[in-house]
Amino acid sequence: MVRHWTNQSVLNYSANNLMESVNENLGSPAVPIGGILPWAKTLAGVPAIPAGFVQCDGQTLSDADSPLNGQTMPALNAATQFLRGNSTSGSTGGSATHTHDDPDITVSRGADGSAQSGAGHSGSHTHVVTVPATASTNQEPPYYSVVFVIRVK
Image 1 (cartoon, rainbow, N blue to C red):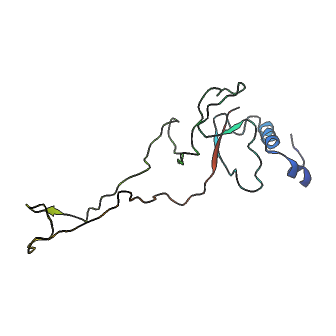
Image 2 (cartoon, rainbow, N blue to C red):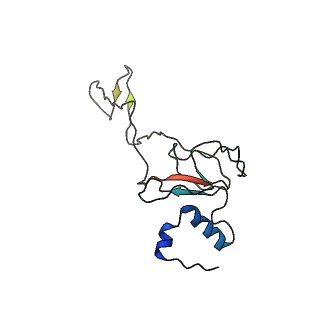
Image 3 (cartoon, rainbow, N blue to C red):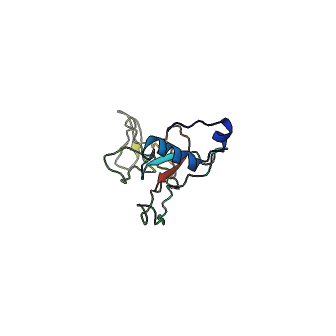
């Protein structure tokens, strides 16, 4: 089926109607149940989430018409996680914090516990390295935040 739209009808086409039209014209759902999509929810002009989708916010789905009824949706929005490909879904990994070792810094301790460096040093001396307990750096690449949604029916 081919549809001809005027500019006005395209502007008035809702997100739900658009999804129904895409599904109808493709002969099968454009997004399968369980498909996760990024959604620019707060971008000006973006319509409300289409029927059959919910946000990936960790909620337990309560929708008798959905095959996912009673299941907990992935919590992808609050956890600020990246999606990662795998042969199965649902596993998690990574860490919110990490440490770095600097192989170029070597410190040896003298018999009295003082830090010493270099061969043939004269006298006892101390090196103090202070690292704040809360020292951390953001290692994320540049990003644009989206709200992840999942098709549930």
